[in-house]
Image 1 (tube, rainbow, N blue to C red):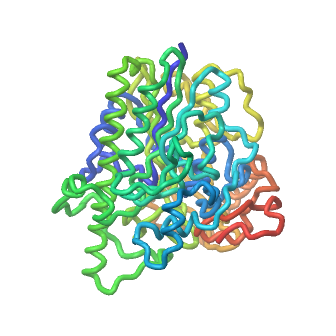
Image 2: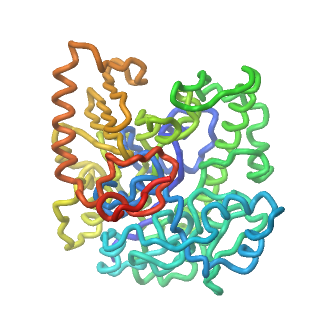
Image 3: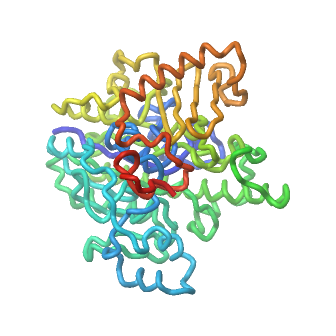
Length: 493
């Protein structure tokens, strides 16, 4: 029988935030064990350093400027008719409880939008190959109320990031979205994943996608279970940076004491949510073993995008600054793949989320022929410890609205189209990206060469109808189609 696939995705997790990656403050025993038994990738990149476009790129294998999702989706999650009476009633109350405010801002007076449209996802290829596809958790690429792209088991959250203790979830019986009270969203996601495993006929292979919202904000104490919060009592988070706010961050504090206090709270909440997710991952893996299917299950773990928790003086990802940044902390993601009876270790090859689709299709011996709009290449040979035909130049690309990046082993060049300033970093001698070399004459030829190759590459993998690089995207949410498909309507907040 074909191997089962467990695909686990965290939300806003920095590549640095695992014990196996060298951080001594976080508690990630199950991810560390997964890394010990599989391959941990040190240079794995997202296609865009923000959730919705990154997730769409994983699913389609396409760049954001082709699939058309180029910022986090702020509107178009569900139809208003799919909200239960309780949500609608509280949305209309002037003095509603605080935990209704966030969903109201994104779900009230709303209409579901199918942002992916006819873009094909690899889950549809999995279905054609005989797989049952299941989703538990965050979708956040449009129209969360209807199972999409081959999924038949569908336990979706209404929006993107959620209130941890008050998530808005789809009830599989009523098919209505309801606000769950005192329900830790991480546990809800884990429990649904386990429910699927318990009900699935193991005579057929499964693809189970578990999309956690952890360790995405909010990080305040009231959002997390006391036992998780208590785990980090008194921690000074010495393995987390302690830097003054970045010039583009927009952050300010009334005093240095206030800044330090906020740093501790945010880092504590981040670690608490990360631990909650790690424990859930451990439960799912143990359940695979109990069901006797662990030895025929490939486990893929990654995050949708990276995250800075004080790095460069930023608390956030690509839109943690304006102009949007593409530091390594934003564009690099933790990635671990564990395959039964296969090699383990650490891989430093430059790879991208857009390589996942061709890898999975080769993994299952799919007959689906990849079309020319897909930039990725299968890295299955790495998993099998074979020779790997890597990308030309050993290069990866990423983009976020008006910002585009080319990254080689030696250099990173970032070009911002409407918003400037551009950046060049020597990734060998300046891996922490402290010294921007743009403007220094001796690097002009390197910049010219990298820019030319980057634009040539994007020209090949971009759809002019959905290319929003010249639009006014400030990283505060997408509300409709982009490019020509917007038909003159506003695309971003």
